[in-house]
Amino acid sequence: MKNNCNSAESLIRYMKDIEDGFTQHESRLSKVKYLALDISSEMESLNSFIQRHTAVVCPECSSVCCINRHSYHTFDDIVYIHAIGEKIPLHKADIDHAAPCQFLGDLGCTIPRTIRPYRCNWYFCASLLDHITEHNSNRRYRLFISLLQQITGKRQKLMEEYASAIKSAVIPRLGKSDNFLYY
Image 1 (tube, one colour):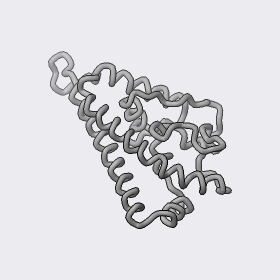
Image 2 (cartoon, one colour):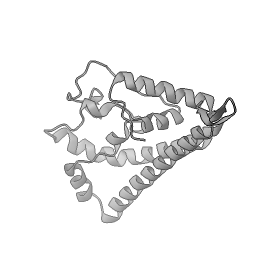
Image 3 (cartoon, one colour):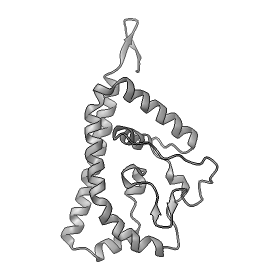
Image 4 (cartoon, helix red, strand yellow):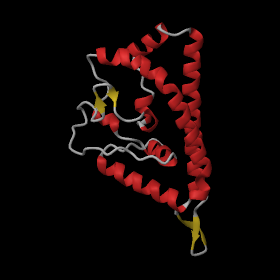
């Protein structure tokens, strides 16, 4: 799913729906939680590597790519964050979408890497990629890219497991096989 929560209102609506799903189907979602914790651990292990490069490149940038429109989590982000037992940061509703991101501080993003929107974690501008390749061996760069690909694959698997678990919770309504209730 790629549904964007492009406003504080839609973010709250998604959060409620996902929370309800986890509450009502906790036992079916154990694999989702396991995958999410694994992803979180891998993202944390990449944090210092990425931070070392963003600390050099981002403060020198004259065109901030972190704009408020990108600060909203997608449905997939919210499923992952809920599965690791964390909360989505509160958004200020009155900030223009084109303004600098409300979570952008003097030292970069104020949201911990493990709960940032996916797009924020994996967006690397040309200057940042140049810096990473210039200051790492080819082997280390390939390892970095491989880990990003593994995390992406696990995230896709997490969402497949979530969809499967929620789908398996479908209950036939009043004995009619073609009418279903979710949750």
